[in-house]
Length: 143
Image (tube, rainbow, N blue to C red; front, side, top):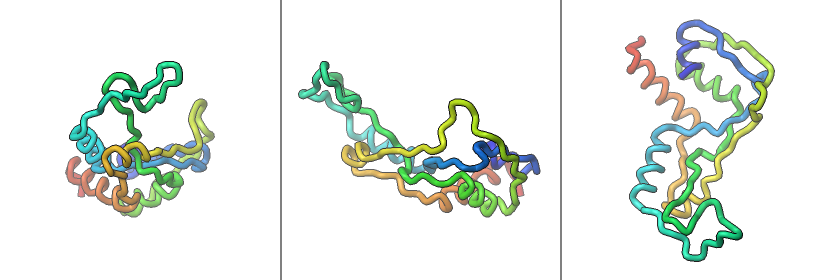
């Protein structure tokens, strides 16, 4: 959202760690699909749960934890290129050092999600950014 707004209004986008970042971008429809599938399969207590050696993904209580992500880290500059292509405008780039506490890369592990409900997000960065750009322009009534 921040990048799209800045690019379309001719404002610079702040790119931390001089663009040497990777993020696991996940398209919203994939997030929703993962949530819906999990909702349709209620969690069950793990009868083998050991309080002395807990598995953080399960419990003696009926719940499960899942990471819903694309599990395909993309270089930040590739994401920005996709955003520029989708919006038809080159971004004004303001390169900055990494922020304290930030990480250079993120990645989702969706193995538990796939095992539980047979789903793994798969929307490509190009496809997702194009769809986002269409939605953004439509929602904000931009040409």
